[in-house]
Amino acid sequence: MKIERTELDGVLVISPDVFRDDRGEFYEAWRRERYAEAGLPAEFVQDNISVSRRGVLRGLHFQHPRAQGKLIFVLQGEVYDVAVDIRAGSPSLGRWAAVTLSADDRRQLWIPPGFAHGFCVTSDTATVGYKCTDVYVPGTERCLIWNEPALAIPWPAREPIVSAKDAQGRRLRELERAEELPPYRATPA
Image (tube, rainbow, N blue to C red; front, side, top):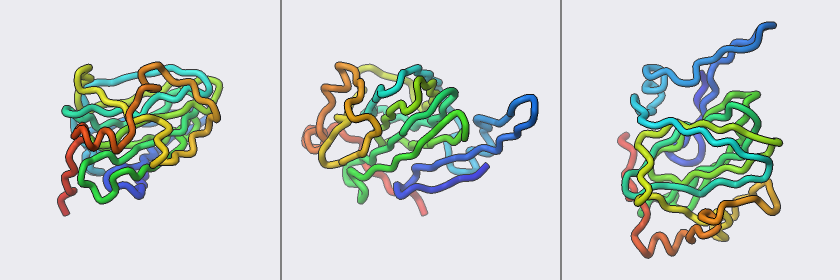
């Protein structure tokens, strides 16, 4: 397993060891001890699967309170996946990291609690899975608008397909003023 750090503290790209032969392939998608050694939580409490078509953009989602850490992986297809630091008081507030995840490379993205998450499908269809550190709680769900000008994320779809709810996402400054962002907690040295 290979771990790559992104420019955002705590956001990691994980490349599991994939064993391929003429029968197909095998890899460990998650192993508690190995991922704990890399700094990920030992327990996840909810697994989610979404299936989407090309051009669908989901996000940028987060919960506050009850922030969720998410381990994102693609079972079929390919997505452009984004994590945005939305922690109030963070030195990297409003910065984002993006990575292409696909069923071909089996890479994963670890997004710790306190970040917004979204992805855009770049293949005909994509099946995305994510393990969560807390359950979905409807009253705590928040959405940062996917096309926030202050972020200038170069989404791969010119006119993405978004849900009515995601189209109503709010700007970062608005969420900050309303005190609807999770607090920043420095990572222990």
